[in-house]
Length: 285
Figure 1: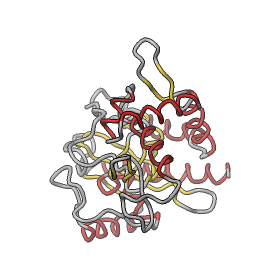
Figure 2: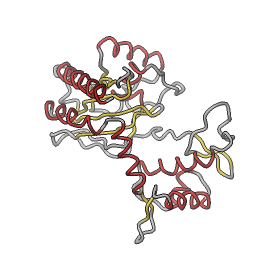
Figure 3: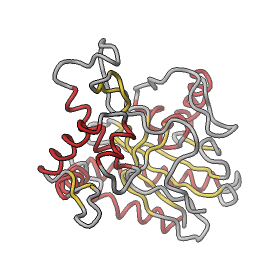
């Protein structure tokens, strides 16, 4: 059950809002007291540039015109931003098709970020968890009201759940998200009702808080087909050298292999792995 790249219907890419020459458009974030169509001074160009870069999270190669249409920017604005990002190496261009893709500077920064967060040094433990259970393993961090997948090791089974690095999941509807919410301290900022993806999705603050209380009591979270029908997951928090939760590790797979009879063993495995990852990260810190 290889997971498709695109998510089920519903809001996935919560870029926030930036403004173009014609007013507010999707693609960036407007924080603070400023209305969405009046960004803080000096942030508009940054917001637009970030939105352009993030548009490549679910599109491998694009033209400036395609980017403009996706983000609601004018074509001239998209061209200016793309050319500036290309000049810095953040984007590269295929001379045969003239389409742009993420460039070497982006790749280097991404690799450095992973290394400095200690993620690459945690891979042996993630591999051991995957090999010990035979199930897919993910390491994710919070990105607003989403969880960004930093690392993913696919299951050894042909029927499996895949989510490549860079994928984002709604924080209220995935096991890693609920582990981060339960032990991280910061509540969701979304308005109710939360986006529904399956009949099991928790869509109210009360329902989510009740579930998070159970997560805190047992030490791990469960995604019981709340994001995709037929997929279950268990996750636990990973802490840094200061005891702060900075990531979550999860086991994910088809419900037929994540039955109630096996779930306690999988939870025990993910808790043990989270403990080893925490100890390793504290040592590295």
